[in-house]
Image 1: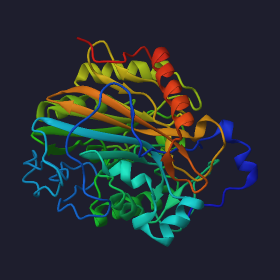
Image 2: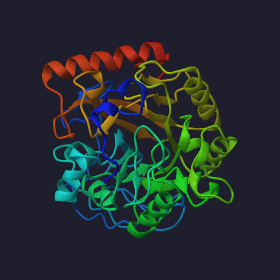
Image 3: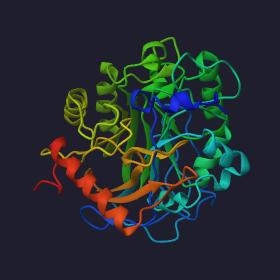
Image 4: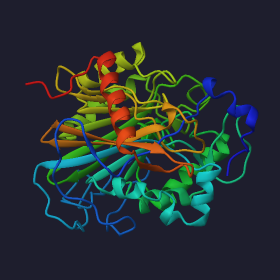
Length: 395
């Protein structure tokens, strides 16, 4: 567990990187209903291998497994037949294990996510942001908040139905160089697929490749948050760290991925905290990524829901998904969250479903009540306006 967070630190919530989140098992329609195969229940062995950080993966989803650019994937264990050429990809926001959530992790990693596992397990492939150092002991960096979780975090993620995480965020190196080394060792040892962090820039910017239902997928991640982690732990040619979104390396990596995959997803840590509208840096980077070939851009960090929808060029952007499994609740919109499921056919996002949720007193994402769901969905749809995005794919 990380450093104790005192009440005085909680009082500084408006100035630091905290918030709360959750996802829902009850889906609320955003554009059109998605169809396709689902994963087996949480904790069911997938039979797929995983990549080391940044490496091209031979892992395939639990449905429609096929040969990836890096080699053969394992047979599917899906309970329902897959739809060839179509894949459902789920996204949730920030996850870490501190205080109440680390207590759940210690009690049993297999049940740490509680009812949230059902919605995480539903898409063909699910991705979240793991916002913590994965290490034990050591000295925290001098920051307002430092997050730390043991390697069993990866067991909890796997049991909950999460297939891939980004660690390109402002808390991945909260325990310094030693914590970063432990994190990279834990990724190698567990074999859990992670992007956005690595032993050097080549690893941090490398795509994760897999193939689902005949669709070749590539995932990348980077951070645009200007604080200590980006300043001191951005990966270079000779130094481990996270992928820096201000580097042209991100754009070139997207172009490379597009040459080898039908669909390229970029998951970013960016935005202004507690602001539901994207800032100028977010918009500019979204433009560059779309031009480079990104099919969809997903984001977190703002601690509130930001706009999501289609750009006029047909690319999909979800600027901010909030937090998903979090140490503290605030009783306001910081507790609102959800799971976004994109249905991709060929190389385009054809539909998007957002399932609103709200953080409970255990730090778990639970389905929003009917009234909460209407409010959160209204908020989600309103945020699309200031993001300049469309509610449906352009014709």
